Length: 290
Image (tube, rainbow, N blue to C red; front, side, top):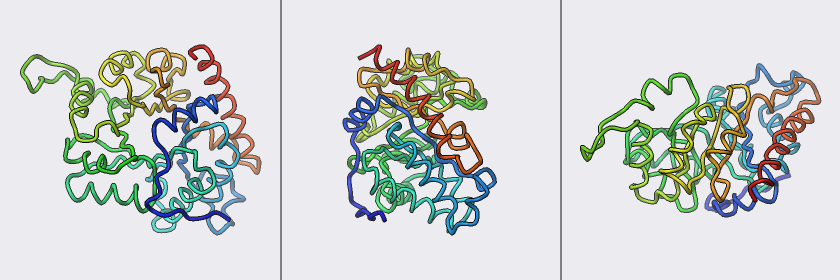
């Protein structure tokens, strides 16, 4: 039985996250993107198969990872039952493994009171440590998230999808009129001027490893959430070579390769095997830089 924590419970600072990385020799983030069509069939007879799947994955991997990231779309797709599964999942992590950094992968993006309500939903009601947001609407769409003390806003900067090149790498005029630069650089630089910007983290796709050097010139101390290692073609060693800072500063996300390593009754054990492979590779990298 797990205990439901109060909504105002503050769980994780970046310093504590860095300590967890050093202790576990891991900077892995596991994406909990649960699709009922892909989980083991024997779970479908249970009252809440999504939560039971998550709990088994979490119990099998918590000592090898520092973060879990449920993508909210995979829960919202199942209506109120899916949302309840998400709530039970985050409450289970917070109460059973409070050293784990939690990310609501919601990619919210709106302004004013709407952003405030999104922030309240994920930071107060669900008590996530962080939430992903889209910056397209600018300062007043992001600052309401940054108002929450000891909570983290993870802003899309340079994503791993093919369509990222539609806008993110286009040259745009600098507001000061001093010349052009890629849009993602302008987004990064502008975000540093916002209130409580020290609470910002950024999404940078692993398939854009050649850009990490330029990104680190702009945000040298921020944590970067990095999807795209493995199946999407991103290289862990390349990301670490160009993206790691003195506090590690990286969270490498992997989802399907871990949680769907098996569709049998051994799914959690097989997930642990995949996580252990990644953790050992990360430990080797950390041993060379520390």
